[in-house]
Length: 113
Length: 191
Image 1 (cartoon, each protein chain N blue to C red):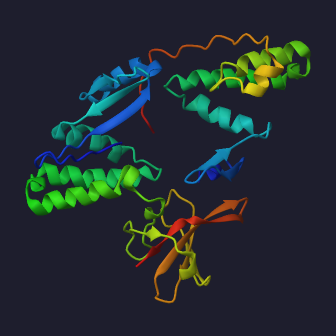
Image 2: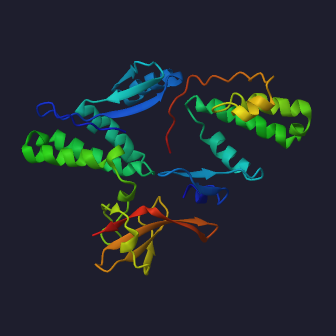
């Protein structure tokens, strides 16, 4: 249903005993999801994760992630997104300085439609 | 959404809760003014905050109308239906009678964490939500009777019939128009 809503992009995976996961990982499909969350912004602090996520997408759009500096930036962003860096990434990029997370403030509930 | 009915004497409590990480405490406080009811409570570990509405009038006049206006599209919609039933029982004071209390207890037992994954099918005949039981593969003859959309917001199901004519609903996921997977673990028998 959610997948159909997003025009059929992404996939659905089994995720644990009682859960399934909808994911979009194809780079060309990500704008579909980003547009949705730009149109209907999150009102919790998770919005900050989304803003940082978009920065990574911007870097990748400009192919900056292929340079050393760009990759460092991507990892610094990831360090502040969701649960941060995995132990493996931490080991590979021990010098990473996480970027500051934006604070989501003065939210209001707009017409939920 | 949570509802709890406690058996202290014969007390029934119905509450609407929202839990969030304490980083969103400000937003949770905003809910008090948005719904014009309820209160925010910090958990003892301070990691999370809860927004709680327990007053029955607030539930029936503020919270329930909100979710009627903006329906839940996940499986939690079923919990909302049970929640409304419980609110109705309490509003009419039916929960003070023995049979009303029993009804409330039954509702409570089957909702939220008590809900089995398999209990969310909608009967194709009556369009009512039906109560399924855990899927028993041996009961399934594998004969496909029909494919129907049981809940408009959910994936279609295949309906099989077993020897006793029980209907077995099997949820399937579609991938670009094709059947990707049958999830035999999350289905139920409808008697």
